[in-house]
Image (cartoon, rainbow, N blue to C red; front, side, top):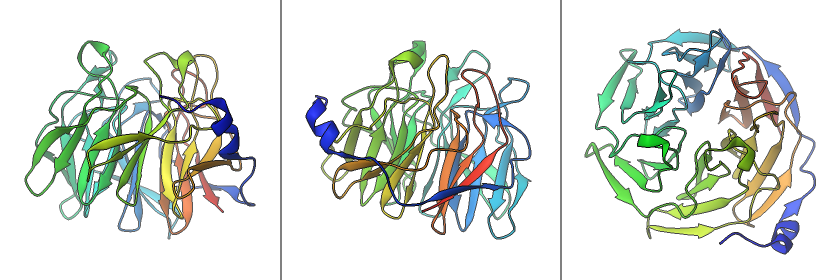
Amino acid sequence: MRLATLPLIAAVTLAQGDGRWSPAAPLPEPIQELSAAALDGKIYVAGGIDRSNHPTAAAFRYDPATNRWERIADLPASRHHMPLAVAGDTLYAVGGLSGQSFIPERTLWAYREDVNRWEARAPLPAPRGASGAAAVDGRLVVVGGWGAGRRLVDSTAIYDPAANRWRNAAPIPTPRDHLAAAAIAGIVYAIGGRPLDPDRNYDVVEAYDPATDRWTTKAPMPSRRGGLAAAVLDGSIHTVGGETRRAVFANHEVYDPTTDRWSVAAALPAGRHGLGAATLAGTLYVIGGGPAAGFAQTDAVAAFRP
């Protein structure tokens, strides 16, 4: 059950701090429908849709110390709408969509930095793309997205790298695609998204506890957004961007899990959807995405420091 209007008003603060956005080195090429994750002091992006509106297998790594991007090994196959997540000391590329007909996939790939190679791991229990992924206690937790027949997936899939096995867990209460996921203190938060239709975006926030295999409803976002990205910074979840069929969002809204409250922070320099977000050294990086609804790509990277 969604929270009523009154708790929504009580749970939102109209401003947060004096954080500012500044430009960082652009991606080597414009890409949308990509994801980002941080590992060992660097940020990785992989897959997406390129400037020719075709899926790509390209992967890149950003070093904030030098403000430079480098290309790393391509994915084994082109993917888009594919979440990246780090569990333990390994970067994973989870499922995603393939082709220009947006076919959901079961693949799980792990990046081996020592040999610059992506390696296959146990496939997902069922194909899914446009989902969210986060890590808790060294395990991947995958939520939402759509599967075969372009039907929303409600199952929660958990991957144990030590056993190289997946298991299905308690279903998400509100099935949705194009959502964001982030984990804090052992809890995975599934944020926003939509029921396949970009004009029916959700403000829903639901939290999953792997220790109890239970979902709970949290305070909704101040805005309804799908096609957004999220990353954890200083113990809060920063959500950015999103789209409808005709417009993109520059919204930047921040969730504090300790108080179950939202605040509105400095908006993105420009709206975009299908973007990547990751944090390093107290800075939020927002990467690529679509500067217009539908097929559109940017190479822009913006850094936010509270």
